[in-house]
Length: 230
Image (cartoon, rainbow, N blue to C red; front, side, top):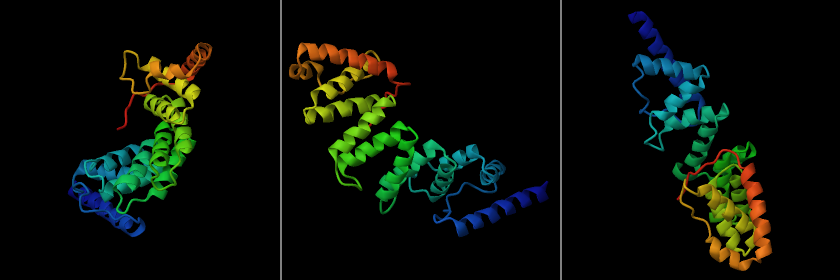
C-alpha cells in the first residue's frame, strides 16, 4: 500500500512539473496538499480530462480570485467548452488580472454570446456601455442588452428599456418595460422605467398595440433569470 501511495504522489508531482513547464500560468504553492489521497485522485482524474475533477480543483481557492492554480483549471475547463468556466475566466481577465486583459475578456464573452449565453451577452453590453476595453457605444450596449433579454435575463430587459428611454425610443422601451414588469409580478422587484410616465409619450392606440406585442414577446422568452447585477 505504501508503495502505491508513493507512486501516486510521484506521478502527481511529475504532472505538476509538466504543467509548470507547459502552461503560461505557473502552479502556485497554494495547490491543496498533494499527499491527500482524495486530492491526488482528483488531480489525476483532471489530468485525464475529467471535467468534474477540473471543476473541483478550480473551486479549491474560489475565495482568492488571483489564485493561479484556479486559473489553470479554468483555462482547461474553458478549452473543454465548459460555459461557467469560460465566463469565470473572462471575468478574471476583466476584473482580477494585473493588468486587466480587456481584449481577452471580450473575446471570451463573444464566444459565449455566439453560443447563446445570456451572461456573455450582458457582459458585452456592460463593456460597451462603460467603454471598458472598447470604444463606448450606447447603441451597441442596447443591442447586446436586448439580445440578453431574449435569453430570459429580466435585468437586461429593464436596462435595455432604461437606455432606450434615454434615447427617446419610446416604443421599444415600452415593450421591454412591459414584459419585464409582467414577469416580475409577485417574483422580483421591477427596476425598469416607470410605465405610467412612459405611456405619456405614446398614443392610446399605440399602447394597445404594444401591449399585444409585449404579450407575444413574453411567450417566446425561455426559462427566466431574475439575477440582478449591481
